[in-house]
Image 1 (cartoon, rainbow, N blue to C red):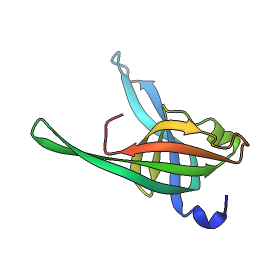
Image 2: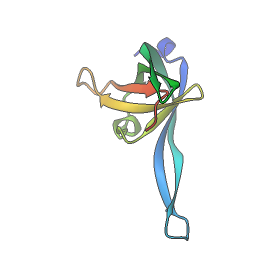
Image 3: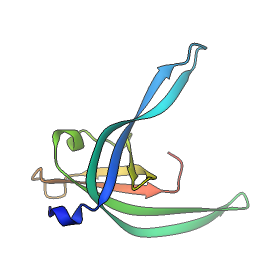
Length: 110
Protein backbone atom coordinates (compact mmCIF):
# COMPACT_ATOMS: atom_id res chain seq x y z
CA UNK A 1 0.00 0.00 0.00
CA UNK A 2 1.38 3.38 -0.94
CA UNK A 3 1.61 5.91 1.88
CA UNK A 4 0.06 8.63 -0.30
CA UNK A 5 -3.23 6.72 -0.44
CA UNK A 6 -3.52 6.74 3.37
CA UNK A 7 -4.91 10.27 3.61
CA UNK A 8 -7.80 9.68 6.04
CA UNK A 9 -7.56 9.66 9.84
CA UNK A 10 -9.12 6.42 11.06
CA UNK A 11 -9.97 5.48 14.64
CA UNK A 12 -11.03 1.92 15.33
CA UNK A 13 -13.35 1.74 18.33
CA UNK A 14 -14.57 -1.22 20.39
CA UNK A 15 -17.73 -1.23 22.49
CA UNK A 16 -17.04 -1.56 26.21
CA UNK A 17 -19.77 -2.29 28.75
CA UNK A 18 -19.32 -1.41 32.41
CA UNK A 19 -21.81 -2.03 35.23
CA UNK A 20 -23.60 1.17 36.25
CA UNK A 21 -24.36 0.06 39.83
CA UNK A 22 -28.12 -0.07 39.28
CA UNK A 23 -28.20 -3.48 37.59
CA UNK A 24 -27.65 -2.12 34.09
CA UNK A 25 -24.62 -1.39 32.00
CA UNK A 26 -23.07 1.75 30.60
CA UNK A 27 -21.90 1.46 26.99
CA UNK A 28 -18.89 3.43 25.75
CA UNK A 29 -16.72 3.20 22.65
CA UNK A 30 -13.00 2.84 23.44
CA UNK A 31 -10.34 3.64 20.82
CA UNK A 32 -8.21 0.56 20.09
CA UNK A 33 -6.27 2.07 17.17
CA UNK A 34 -5.66 5.51 15.65
CA UNK A 35 -4.14 4.99 12.21
CA UNK A 36 -4.13 6.29 8.64
CA UNK A 37 -6.25 4.66 5.95
CA UNK A 38 -8.00 5.21 2.65
CA UNK A 39 -11.77 5.72 2.44
CA UNK A 40 -13.55 5.11 -0.86
CA UNK A 41 -17.30 5.72 -0.79
CA UNK A 42 -19.20 3.61 -3.30
CA UNK A 43 -22.96 4.07 -3.10
CA UNK A 44 -25.67 5.76 -1.11
CA UNK A 45 -29.42 5.51 -0.72
CA UNK A 46 -32.35 7.30 0.86
CA UNK A 47 -35.40 5.59 2.34
CA UNK A 48 -38.59 7.17 3.68
CA UNK A 49 -39.46 5.54 6.99
CA UNK A 50 -42.17 6.78 9.36
CA UNK A 51 -42.42 10.00 7.38
CA UNK A 52 -38.71 10.77 7.68
CA UNK A 53 -35.92 10.45 5.14
CA UNK A 54 -33.12 8.15 6.27
CA UNK A 55 -29.91 8.30 4.25
CA UNK A 56 -27.08 5.78 4.30
CA UNK A 57 -23.89 5.27 2.31
CA UNK A 58 -21.54 2.32 1.80
CA UNK A 59 -17.80 2.45 1.36
CA UNK A 60 -14.48 0.67 1.80
CA UNK A 61 -11.73 1.58 4.26
CA UNK A 62 -8.28 0.15 3.43
CA UNK A 63 -5.71 -0.20 6.23
CA UNK A 64 -2.20 -1.60 6.44
CA UNK A 65 -2.13 -5.09 7.95
CA UNK A 66 -0.90 -5.31 11.55
CA UNK A 67 -1.72 -7.32 14.66
CA UNK A 68 -4.14 -4.56 15.69
CA UNK A 69 -5.92 -4.32 12.34
CA UNK A 70 -6.08 -8.13 12.13
CA UNK A 71 -8.13 -8.11 15.37
CA UNK A 72 -10.87 -5.83 13.94
CA UNK A 73 -14.32 -7.46 13.80
CA UNK A 74 -17.79 -6.50 12.60
CA UNK A 75 -18.70 -5.68 16.24
CA UNK A 76 -16.24 -2.74 16.17
CA UNK A 77 -16.76 0.58 14.42
CA UNK A 78 -14.53 3.11 12.69
CA UNK A 79 -14.52 6.89 12.86
CA UNK A 80 -13.13 8.29 9.61
CA UNK A 81 -12.27 12.00 9.69
CA UNK A 82 -14.77 12.45 12.54
CA UNK A 83 -17.64 10.47 10.95
CA UNK A 84 -18.66 7.22 12.75
CA UNK A 85 -19.29 4.22 10.49
CA UNK A 86 -20.46 0.68 11.19
CA UNK A 87 -18.28 -2.18 9.96
CA UNK A 88 -20.27 -4.64 7.84
CA UNK A 89 -17.38 -6.88 6.69
CA UNK A 90 -13.65 -7.35 7.34
CA UNK A 91 -11.39 -9.06 4.81
CA UNK A 92 -7.81 -9.59 3.69
CA UNK A 93 -8.42 -9.25 -0.07
CA UNK A 94 -5.25 -10.96 -1.31
CA UNK A 95 -4.79 -13.27 1.66
CA UNK A 96 -1.18 -12.05 1.95
CA UNK A 97 -1.42 -10.08 5.22
CA UNK A 98 -0.54 -6.77 3.57
CA UNK A 99 -3.80 -4.87 3.94
CA UNK A 100 -7.21 -5.15 5.52
CA UNK A 101 -10.39 -3.91 3.85
CA UNK A 102 -13.40 -2.89 5.90
CA UNK A 103 -16.79 -2.60 4.22
CA UNK A 104 -18.44 0.24 6.14
CA UNK A 105 -21.84 1.91 6.26
CA UNK A 106 -22.61 5.38 7.52
CA UNK A 107 -25.94 6.88 8.52
CA UNK A 108 -27.56 3.77 10.03
CA UNK A 109 -27.97 2.39 13.53
CA UNK A 110 -25.63 -0.37 14.72
